[in-house]
Image (cartoon, rainbow, N blue to C red; front, side, top):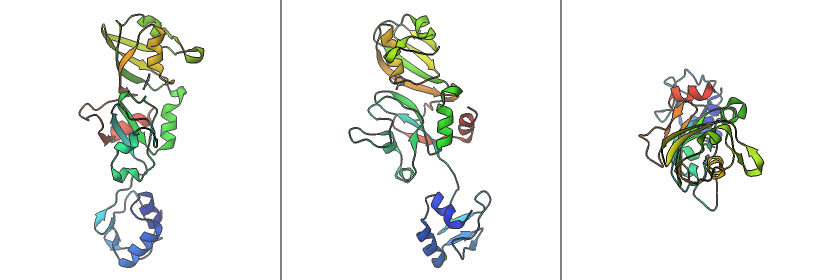
Amino acid sequence: MRLDKFLSETKTLSRTETAKAVKQGIITVNSKVALKPNLPVNEETDIICVSGRIIEYNKYRYIMLNKPEGYVSATDDKSAPYVTQLLSEDLQKFELFPVGRLDKYTVGLMILTDDGRLAHRVLSPKHHAEKVYYFKCEKPLERTEELEAGVHIEGGYLTKPCKVKKLSEFDGEITLTEGKYHQIKQMLYAVGNRITYLERIRFADIPLDTSLERGRWRFLTEDEIEKLRKI
Ligand code: URA
């Protein structure tokens, strides 16, 4: 890869800025001053510095966010705050988007990335990635076998088999492998109940990091990224 491509892909410098920085002699590749912007570099092995700062090469970014209530799962919205606004200014430069949607009042685990191919794969219905939600409901939780077998929601759609774990009379966990609009709310409604609290606590094999406060984010670990790739 060319040096100027490396620096623009890592959102360090634009091509014009790289040309200028090369003239100023502030870019080094393995401790040698770079003399031309089109210098071939190996992004995996070369140590590239701008004004002494090492520039890491990460082709894509993968983030875990603990979504707070009131934010929409979008990258832009005029009427409500949206999840990418919770990321740092540095990250705003990348085109990160949420992998799947959570309703405005649902909280918990949300993954964001700029890796479109991976997002597309993990969301594809044919991969059946499990999503686990903790919920509270208004009335005693009953008819769980019906929920597990599938219930009719909007448009006559019959939901796919799922797992429901009753924790107490008024709360439980539900594991889905699909994601229709307001699915859990609609499912509980179909059995005469109503959701009063909804939190996603696991996405595939990745649990919500409970040390992450609501509204805070962190990068996924290598191990977590690997779990996504395995879907
Ligand atoms: N089901 C819902 O009803 N809402 C969500 O945010 C996710 C699943």
